Each structure stands twice: as C-alpha cells, then as structure tokens.
Length: 304
Ligand code: PSU
Ligand code: MN
Image 1 (cartoon, rainbow, N blue to C red):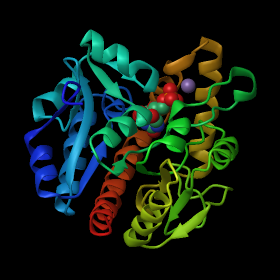
Image 2: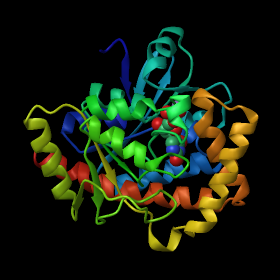
Image 3: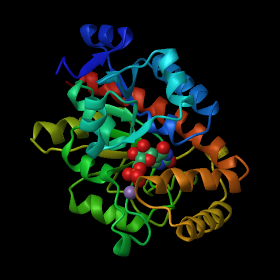
Image 4: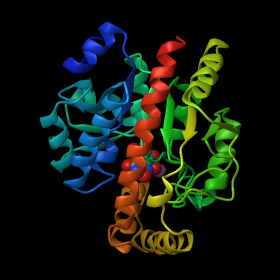
C-alpha cells in the first residue's frame, strides 16, 4: 500500500502514537461548497476535531497517491482549483494512475480510511437514492460502500433532495444500521426532523463505539450511518427549505443534469435560492458532526 498511500506528518504521528483519528472527505470542499467558505470550513472542522481530542485526516488524491491528511496549502488548492475530479469508488484507480487531482466522495473516503486503518469518518451529508430513481436508477455509490467498508460515518441524516424513504429501504436491505444520535427520528440535513425513524437511538459516543465494535467483532462487514441532527439554532424551516428543494429538482430535470453532476448542481441551486442560508446551515451541521465524531473516535480508540 505504500505505493499508493501517503500521510501528512500530523496523521503519521497520530498513527505511531495510536491516537484517535477522524477521516474527512474532500468532495464537500471541492464540489459541495463555494470558495472561500469551503476552505475556511475545512480548516475550522479540523480544528474542532483537534479540540475534542482526535486528529483530523482530510483525504484526497494527489500526484498518484491517496493522501491521508492535507496540508494547509493542499486544502486551499482543493477549495480553489477547477481541475479537481469528483472521485467515487469507480474513479479511484483512474485518478491514481493518471496522477490527476481527485476530491473523494463519501464512498472513496471510506475506502481510503479503511486502507489507512481509520474507523470513523465525519461529513455533512451522504449520497442516497435520488427521487425518481425507479426511472433513472440514480443511487449513490455511497450506499453500497456503507454495506461493505468498515468505517462509521457521522452525518446530519439524509437530505430531502433524495428520496429518504427509498434510501432507508436500500440501507436496510444492505444491512447498514442507521443510528440516531440523541434522536429517534432521522434528521433531514437542514432540519432536525423527518417522517422517518432511525434503526436505533443512541445517547452517547460510547454507545456508538460499542455498537460498532460488536458489529465488527462479529465479522459483519460494513459501516453505519450515525445521524446527528443540525443544532436547533441553525436548522431551517421545513416548509421553506422543502419548497426550495422542489424548485431545484424541477430545474435539474429541465436542464437534463445527469450522473455525478446531480448532487453538486442541486446543492448549488439550493444555496442560490436560499440566498446562502443553506450554506450557513451546512457549515453549522458539519462542525456539529465534527464534535460528535471526535468523541466517537476517542471511544472507538478506547474499546479497540
Ligand atoms: N451531500 C452534501 N454535500 C456533499 C455531498 C453530498 O450535502 O458534498 C457529496 C458527498 O461527497 C457525497 C457525494 O459522497 O456528494 C454523493 O454524490 P453522488 O450522489 O453523485 O453519489
Ligand atoms: Mn448519482
């Protein structure tokens, strides 16, 4: 693996000392948020993880290697460059072989984290089953990855640009637990609530760590979705955001947006139509996830 993986000094040292490490994705930086808020958020999220007792490892493809932990200049580059490819499972081999810049999605970040021995990953939102998937077959590779790669993923639930019900059905079929962190209801990213229940509710980082350890000790492959609701003060109003998501979906359909461009298009459109309110909410929820994720990484490190 040495041929394909490289580590930042900070992450290498953390590995040597056996410190808890939290993986972070780079698609959210390159394709999920505009510059410069993306870079600023990435830096702040890393610092929150340090402040809560773990070491951050933002992951991306650079110069033919999967880089585990980015320098400040690299974070800036991934936030600002326009030649960064959105990289999921199918793209990894190509980007590494051609030495192009790749920003890793949830799926690719999980793969990289597992290769690097990192058990916990923090992000904002995962991909899922898109609305209309019964016709388009647009189902994110993130879901398949969650069923086979041993990394727990902290997120703020499933966004209603997706078909949340079908996303949960898919995860159930694939045996992926969807855990509510201090909630019985699946949060819907911008809002704390949805009409869907989680598989289990947990009320502490230790409970999550114990559940993951038992699952993995039993030889059950795959990760879990740890759904952590956006803080009350940052949540958007349900009818406001859902109305805007409807508009964004109509526009994506009219413009014929397809494949891997769908999610970035919808996120950008929602930001525009909410006049930036969705971006503020997105930033707040990722930071909140970083805090919870660091605590889970610490607990996982203790029950190893
Ligand atoms: N949801 C967000 N922000 C994001 C993404 C999803 O709120 O940046 C990104 C993640 O990297 C996720 C990817 O893995 O989009 C899913 O893309 P697709 O639907 O094309 O699989
Ligand atoms: Mn897709």
